[in-house]
Image (cartoon, rainbow, N blue to C red; front, side, top):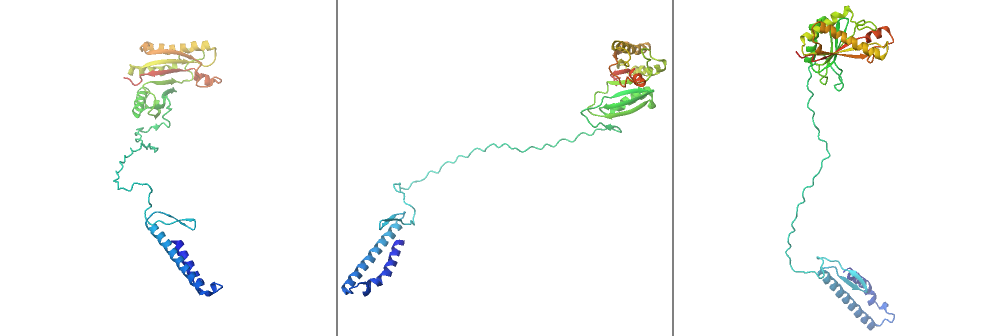
Length: 307
């Protein structure tokens, strides 16, 4: 269609020149009439071609129009025609859509768990141990007639029971309570008492000095009110002498204490002597005072709170 319009415009521009007498050099009127007829026929032919092109374009599809040997695609105003396609009416069967199973998604989010509040520990006037993973063992140390209780016990009730027991033997003024409360502490039914008197034994001797027998009498009183309690008596020495002699001396000191207890009516089956020798000093063996502290007796008590 564009080509036809262009052609018409061209002929319109050329027509005046075709009818002008100056167009032909001979100026022959017959010649001019002949040329006009040719021009009219040319215009009619171009119009016919244009009409054919318009009709083809209205039939639909993009059709190729050959003019002057050039291929031109005519625009398509309808739906494109499919060559060789079956034009019969077909009722399409709707496709069955199968829903995909929902994909399993693993969430990477971390579930926040609210910890239960820590139980309230009744410590009374006692201090709570700072590190429950490493409690200190409970112990009692007797020096100058006073017992000092230290270390960790599991509950407030345990601390109170031990203090009451010690005060029943030594009196309220004879007990210093330095316990701490620690829920993970070991069973307070088993305890350790160290008798740390500087001159309990003379050097090389296993004889208990008379001035310290009242201290041993307190141990006998405790065993009397705790008949299920048993005692392991450990003897220690300083480093003076050989290892073999000190081992024998420490055992003799433990046996001397047990002999005193049995002499006061305590069943010997409740007591066991052990000689440690010089292997567990609590002070320096290079000083007189240090060696005196190392010559000592310890009591390891079992079933302390059992009545």
